[in-house]
Length: 449
Image (cartoon, rainbow, N blue to C red; front, side, top):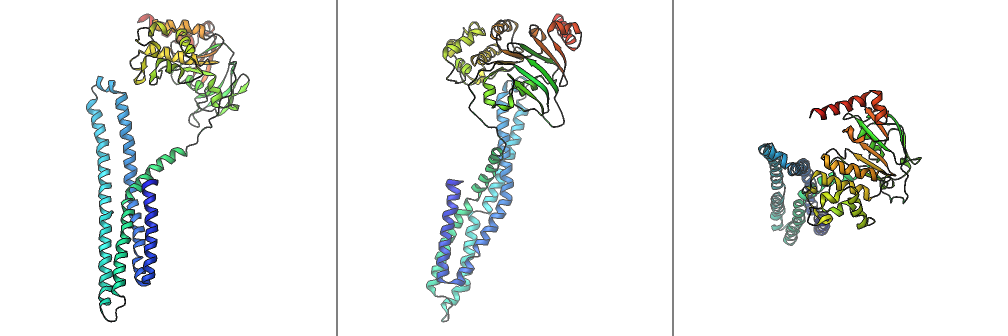
């Protein structure tokens, strides 16, 4: 837009102004007639924009859909092949591709009709009109213009249409840039969050939720009047059926979202009085589906943080018991990680994710279904490591497998966004409430299997 289109427009406009000044100096009447070209160009551009804007919006939108479809197909290739979904996937892609082809062809036709071909037609019509009207008169004795002036005007008219041709030929690029910039600026106009340097202070990890109510969509509360306290070094487990609000509590603690009512305190200070960067510097999180970046196992633990030394990386991996599982790798902790760690087992990826959280030495550790995808043997390794790691840290555990949280200091049972039961495993079993029912159901399911 800036290098080609606008530069062409500016230089062409200056060139046209110069030509018109020269025309007016030669003959005012002829120059006024030639000035008709300006409103024609304006109407021309309006007509072009009316159609081109629609086509370009559709083209950019379809290109986005094509890229998304390609990414989805590549990511889910194993599922597509396993369920013999190749034909349907190809048909869906072909439909998008054909839509893109159809609108590109419409743009091609539009450019053919309203580009230099039409400029040449207008230029020739202007020549004919000028010579027809003034040419014959100039040959008579009482000619209104001299042959020299007529020749000069024909030459200037020819020069005038050169920048016009340049402007018209840039219409397609201008419209494409305008449509693309709309999408870019729509993203840039989205409200952002302030990024600040984290304050270098070590938190104790004393967490308090005070009457917290939260809704992703206004009027539909997913958490209602949540109140609890997790003291330094305690392990708090969150259990409940899917959609009960377990992950939402952790999203609020990490400030991925902000609450509508109540307050969340860490060490007696509201988390909303400090930056997100300061808050998250004190937290480590391990998700159910760990994400590994391209690089090495060691770089995935440190994530490029220069403050985390090699000794810390290796110590973290040893703490979670990764040495035994990763010892078969040729290059050990420097083994390359590709394709989100597809060459590693789910247990190995999870161990690296655990080590990553520990290397940052968090005051608060969040385990979101962290052992859900791990086999029994690997889970035993991690459970032993966690007993050491959790020492002195406040730990939140979200779990569906209730057998993994029997040692938690406090278990919060959520139902439809509310805490319906709280206490230790033994206390909740004695209450014979919802937790006891869930535990017995899982125990029975395991026994039957």
